[in-house]
Amino acid sequence: MKIKERLFNKRIISIDALRGITIFVMIFVNELASVSNIPQWMKHMPADADAMTFVDLVFPAFLFIVGMSVPFAFNVRLIKGDSTKIIWAHTLKRALALVVIGVFMVNAEYGYDASKMIITPALWGLLAYTLPIPIWNRYSESFPVWLKNILQYGGILILIVLCFLYVQDTGERGMTPKWWGILGLIGWAYFFTVLYYWLVSGNLWAIIGFLVFCVLLNSFNLIEGSFVQNISWLSFIAGHLTHASLVASGVIISLLFFDKKNKPMINWPVIGFIVLFVLTAVLLRPYFGISKIKGTPSWTMFSAAICTAVYYFLFWLIEIKKQTKWTEFFMPAAANPLLIYILPGIIYYFNQVFNLHIIPNYFKEGLPGILWSLLFSVLMLLLIKVCNRFKIQLQL
Image 1 (tube, helix red, strand yellow):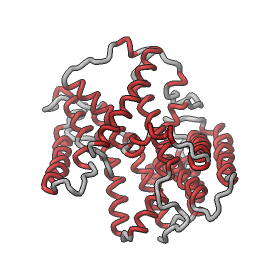
Image 2 (tube, helix red, strand yellow):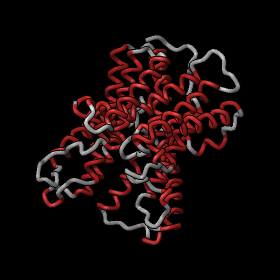
Image 3 (tube, helix red, strand yellow):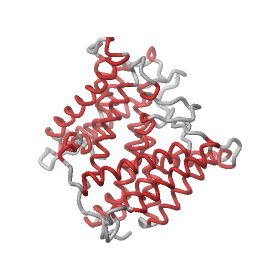
Image 4 (spheres, rainbow, N blue to C red):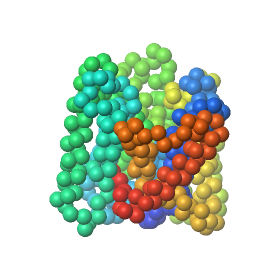
């Protein structure tokens, strides 16, 4: 694979801003999920609703941003002179880590028999959410190697023990991937897209072909009795290519913005893809509807169109108009996305373990609940800023 000479060899503020904003909204909607008596447009739409809200756009935005970062990540490693072996080892470790963390999080939520577990489900969940910090923390060069090894390998050992301590509600010992969790789905989509990106050396037209393939396979996988559904391994891949289509969309838009000699004032190819995403979603909607839960192609393509449009605005505002001051609020989260994703879970299980009830019931419904969710999101961004200052930063 060759270095893409025209890609910037530095961080793109507009991409970081989109990541930070997405994380802020993610924390808000996750906290809002426990609030009752709120409008439907502030919740996930039901599976058969043929509609989506801004809440249904958060996960696609994560996938889209992962895709936008792929060309830069590969370029940086190639410029550093990393070998193919090193690059692929890093890719596989990152994908596997996301899948593992995702599965642990899912099992912490439900599917256990508390009466047969040696430790309480709350303590199990607290450990499952907390252990990724010592395992995947970005330790400084001055950090003692022996202590780093104890924290990392000790954390891995405890995770393995947690697997055997878990008792399913069926009575079986050990975890199962009931579903992969948000992080796990991101891990699978990242893996399939990066694998293809490497094989085609980041060729734009080949990535576009991959996107078309993802949408087609996703569609066939939703047709009852189709050949895709009847072949288990193909259906498994098709399910993950649903989300890979959003990662691929991010890769395409990133290349259209940054892998160019000339930077025109109006990026017509990007605008063209917004139109294509919308047309694809509209044409497929009568057959599959719009559903995040079902993972329909109309949901992915409408999401890709919205993410592209939002990013285009941020690109204009930040990269062209140089309005960057306001982005500083979101940058700590953008620099440490995995940690801020798991922090609310750590707080939740910590409160359960020690039976703490800090938030009054008054803040669990209606407008007070909405305001609390907004305040909680701000507090999480302030907390992650503190974590960054003390060098607590997760890096897969």
